[in-house]
Length: 465
Image 1: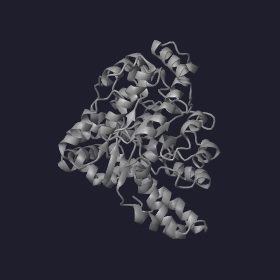
Image 2: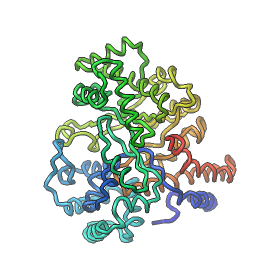
Image 3: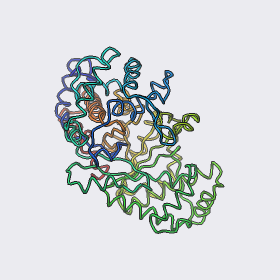
Image 4: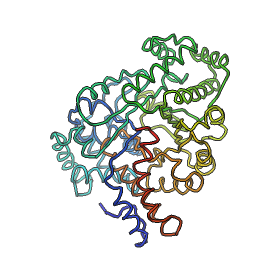
């Protein structure tokens, strides 16, 4: 791979970017938000095969193939009932290779090429002609101890990796990791969507199970809130430092307790209108923020995704299968109830993410540049690319600076892409900083400090790691 990839074309600015990058290139990886499976590190068994490592878990990969007419079943994606299609992993890999040209110019291409080259030492281009050789080489390496999950974790220089589990999860894999004596730090994150979203399948049953787990009467508003407090403490006991909330919008509410209780009763009865369901989700964001003031868990809000947009795919293969689509999102009016309640609290950290880039300079940066409780999360999903990171810095720095942002996180299920994604972020930020230095807007000594902070310190502080 080109050692100067993503650096500016101007040789003088490129030299500055290179010097900044050399300082941060080998810093430990802080991965404070993602969706890797903790079972990998608990059992430390070999990854099954190259297709299961690179294709099946990576939404970026399989959604692109689906967009060109490849069926999900041909890619080994499980069905909604948990059953697996009868697809040979080598056949999945060959389909992947035959369509690899689709990724030209995308961040996925850069991540995949990085993993092939830097993780597995494969120097030839990946193509239909080399597909079987790549498969055999990767599969042989996966059979060795050096490519088991814990060994790769250590080789990637990951200091801490956060996974994301639902509120009803027993966290047994995290308990197994903790009991194993392994020194790698894998922590969980509290994701309560299944018990705060009235539109979530089985919501009332989920809330009943929530009560059984916590010993609280979740048929009442007060008991339901107490169940969240109990469950959050359980997650903290198993390493959690953050919560995560994937809501369709950023709407928040701060209703009087009797109104909130009445809304909760309608949610349990399944009689909420769409507007009432959205109001309940909004109320729960404010309740979660208040709880974060008490237990000091960092709060993440991932708003603005139309989840499971394809009804046929949702029916056949279930949730989270590549059809979450960005939507126009309001933050200024939507967040006002929460911010009126707790926005001026310096001990609260609420990290905002968006898929609507038009809000960067108009809404998000001005909000984070004023409210002590707010930080901006890094570009997310479709925007965690060189261009996306550049657009983010250009649109937000002038209003909220660097220190109202939360560093970088990779937000991935594809384990081998973690070092590649962090490398892209480090190179992108160094390229941006080099431009500030070259145009006289930032001293080079300050740029070196900022590069370190963006790469390492800000994420540790934002997530209390």
